Amino acid sequence: MAQHLTPLDATFLELEESDETAHMHIGALLVFDPLPGGGTPSFEEGLAHLEQRIEALPRYRQRLSEPRTGGLSWPSWEADDEFDIRNHVHRAALPAPGGESELMEWLGNYWSHRLDRRRPLWDAVLLEGLEKGRWAICTKTHHCLVDGVGSLDIGYVLLDTSRRPNGGWAEHAAKPPDEDDPNVLQRLLHGARSGLDAAVHPHRLTEMIHHSKALAELIVRDELVAAPHSSLNRPISSERRYAVVHATLKQVKDVKNALGGTVNDVALASVTGGLRRLLLARGEEPPERGLRAMVPMNIRPAGDQLSLGNQITSLFVHLPVAEPEPEHRYRLSMAEAEGLKSGTQAIGGETLLQVAGVAPPVLHSFLARSLFASRLFNVTVTNVPGPQIPLYAMGAKLREIYPLVPIAAEHAIGIAVMSYNGHIVFGVNADRDTVPDVDELVDGIRESFAELRRLARKAGAAA
Image 1 (cartoon, helix red, strand yellow):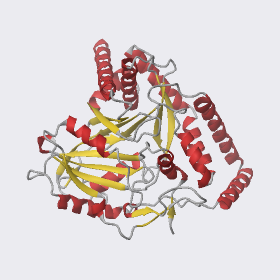
Image 2: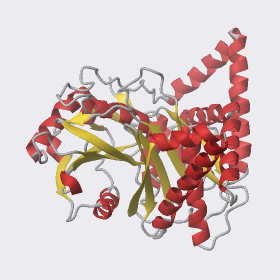
Image 3: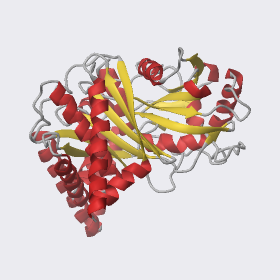
Image 4: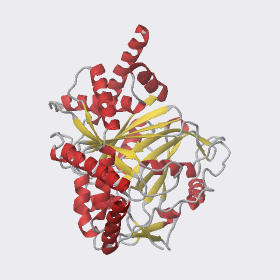
């Protein structure tokens, strides 16, 4: 049977359809050392490697039954009888000297272009010419196909855990998402059955009340009380800038061990400091209530590797950009996170997605836009913990992963934090027209993290 998109998966198609400036693909740049014998793989070698590995991912050979949403049913995934991997894998080279400046310019351009909806919704480039003889695989995959955590799981299919190719996780077959029934009448009947089920099982009624209360709190807190006005939320272009900040996992853990909190707290506090510097450099007073960040949260069940589709909800975190003192700013960030952990916001967000999913496709686009409106949040910040063991492709060691999170209409900045094998990369995706000063943000993240490290050393010396 055909596998229909879930309402959440379809949301990312609808966001593109409602505004040409929105690109809803996620992505990553995987930077490798030279091959064991030196040099980089030929295009044919790279092509053969990727073609062999995607055998474990049938969805990567499927396309949408319809290129657009709407009507009375969601598009479904269907086999692309004309699939040719050469339409999806390309070759490119950086201009000399192949340093970070050339790489960032290339990435911004590559990630500025949408995927072709007439074909399976992914693309990859074998990129040569990086300094130190390194090479890379750069990808973009539509968010309707997979979320950030799911794409990380899929990375294991493409990579090996030793220099000798061992097939990654190719022995595991990809699990399709649950069947989504497009029939509105059946949805209504399902709702009626759910009500009867709650009457028969009172504990489920209690659970429904809990979810309803959580949804009400979310709407009051994060919709009726709008996100603050900011220069980060204005009409954007379809072109992107990309920049990175590097750190080590040890450095981050040293901070959280000395000051308290978690790795995520350190990442968010560093981003908060960077956003504060950007606003001040623009002559803009940081909002007293803080900027509101949408932080995607994984709800993928443990052991659910290689299942595609989206299994996420969102938390809305206030970033205390108005606080000038670094340590107090960090304490405020931690307190915000602690409040969210003990609250009902995650349940409310998940319930909101479920409620939106009940709407027929012809009406769903309006709800989809409201879930990603600038009224609801100012900036996206996502943290994806990666594997802490070295990985390889064709015998070459994977050195770094640069992550990409998409930005919706009227959202100028999205920041993805990715850890891998002891390293952390903050990947900044910014609109090219409205964020010409992306270096202020990057320098601010770097400076804020350095301040936290100094505070950590001071706390350690006083202990």
